[in-house]
Image (tube, rainbow, N blue to C red; front, side):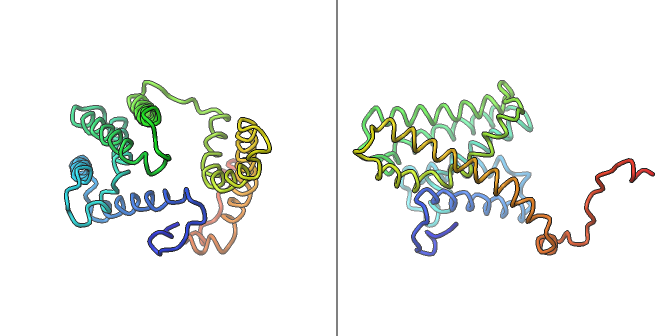
Length: 242
């Protein structure tokens, strides 16, 4: 999950995001250990200021790493959205959210060349529109303007997202290389999408819904998790009452 720090080749190119995600968890852990969670809004503003300095290339040692530049504003925006939803809206929280959005737009323009080959003006416009759209959806949820109903379909689609993330990139590229020049591009994309979703469904059904719960019931897991001495919940409440 952290091959970049060990100078080891990635199993899959898209797994670079895992290191960014883990760094965020590490920062949250430090805040909790320091018992500073009640100062979260001040810390978020400091974070955004650090990201702004990085954007303008201020030479502050270690700031790029600790601020998670150029992706930190996406996490900060999510934090502001959580505060808006859980504690209510305020001018400061709205300002923090929109500052995160502006930094996200700036980073999108700056980083597009690292993800697209010679991005055109149209490419950049699409990137910026997607960033604004994502922030808009998150804000609408934070303000409770829009809520996704808890349906079985929504739960199933949500469960597929992580397996699809893990599997789509390398497998998709291999399939595309095999079909390039053999079948039309639109058909190749359709087949690759179908294979990716099919694999995600398989992993969700066989691993996450069957294997993981099975492992969770083993004595080894219960011992490692410290729950070996905790009796399983009684499935018959009437028996418990009697």
